[in-house]
Image (cartoon, rainbow, N blue to C red; front, side):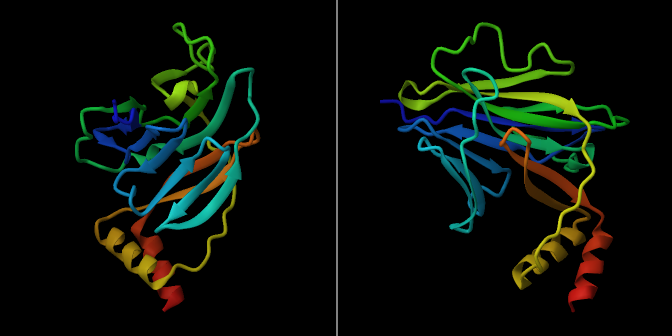
Length: 221
């Protein structure tokens, strides 16, 4: 019996730096998927269960729930889109060998969007993937789902980051302490959860200048 969980790891790279990578893994016994960002798998992760009831948990508590969206084309469902602007490439340490890093030009005004598609059994997989004919579309990887439940493919594309506004709750004392530690290391990284018009969850990786932490700290002290 094979207990190996198929995985895809991916991120972006530019100017000798890289983003924190995302890991997508398939369930061993059920046709489900689990998604987490580098170093945060035990703290928070996304679960895309076979029932179609999906959620994000943080420290064991459910924070976000949503229902599997409708197919964007017959046989294909975009489940999640991970948006990585060029500022997300902040790490200087090398990525593990199995991580697929998409090179991005330093002067680009576009963000890289990693779309996670669930493909129904019987979908055409012969040298193809959703959006293959679109400009700047890159195949990242494909993994099988358990019990013959189809496949999952990750595709990268380039798109402008649309302007928007987000209001975040007051950080807890533990969160503020963590933000101070990040500021000491010269970078503040966060992931904002949103939604695309097709119903897919949007995960937007952002980096803030350390002075932002000082501003927040002063306002809350």
